[in-house]
Length: 296
Image (cartoon, rainbow, N blue to C red; front, side):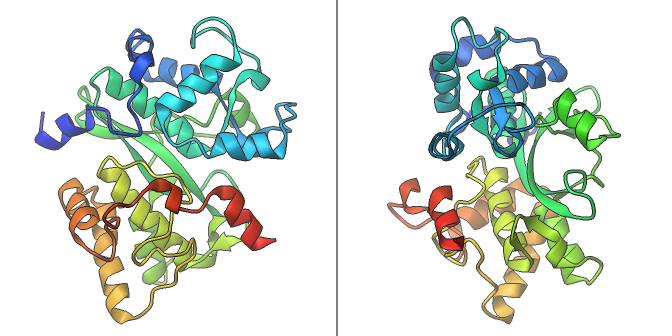
């Protein structure tokens, strides 16, 4: 196993499971079982009504803001009696988004020593005619000697409503585009950047944000989907300032497209336009509630 695959088999700050590691390690290795475990713990924030779940706005935004797998697992544990594996009702699940479903799967796999990583990009299957902001988890299949994409958000109910026609634990590259691929498609004129985003946020500035977050994910820094506030990502939508920045972003897209962990890590630690500032703390990044308030 290569040095980088070994690196991805160890927990990061955000995927470490702490007190829950033994429970995660005891789960079956089968990826479908890992996804079922995740479905039972989390409920998607934008699907609450579809599950008949009534959650107050304050609680929803607070739970969506949870950054670390261990904290998500702790909240899930507090919401229901029994173990994390025991079947629970929708209202006993943690309100989450795609990044969190992927984070928990990644946390389980890394607890088992299975190389895995989050990827930030865009899905073709969530909103017709759009490339919607999305996160998946990739794991290394030793049997097939390749990275396999897993969309842990897609439980049977999702699949039925969305008419999913592919294997959710082996998502085709054509259905989920890593951010670098999306950037190159739009820069080449092959796709319209306005089709990439979520809600009222879209365009090249949105793709830029996902591109930077994907490089951090490749470097085992699994950000929240709205983390911003430093370098060339000072705002949630930060248009490229000049030709030099476009040239930099074009190069970053290659690293994302090629899943180039070595260069991704070099950029996010050494390039002053991308790297987190010294003494950075995550509470300097705006919360989702703050982003929503800016739009109102």
